[in-house]
Length: 91
Image 1: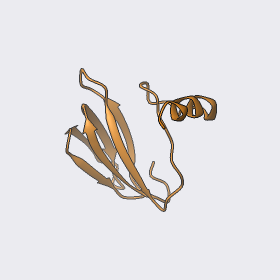
Image 2: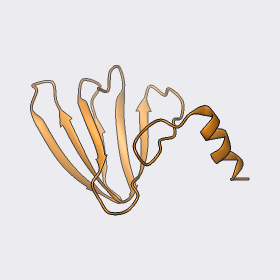
Image 3: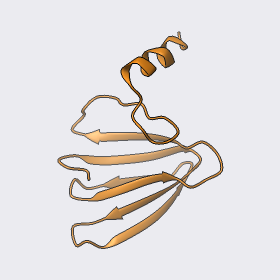
Image 4: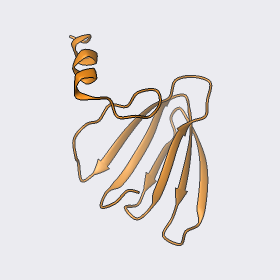
């Protein structure tokens, strides 16, 4: 759920399926391709998944801002230790 925050998803690469449940409990399924965006209200629940054959790269913006999180290919938040290793590879 976008509890207390609005969220914007921008697909940079790949294909994502975004399932949204709105305040009236209606289910909406959106297939997003590279270049597509979706804006969710703070009262909407969602599930985002990679449904393409390539890696999915999504830029997510939350309002209010709560920091930056990195996710692995399985959609899990990357640990601080993993994040430090990833960032050390980029000057």
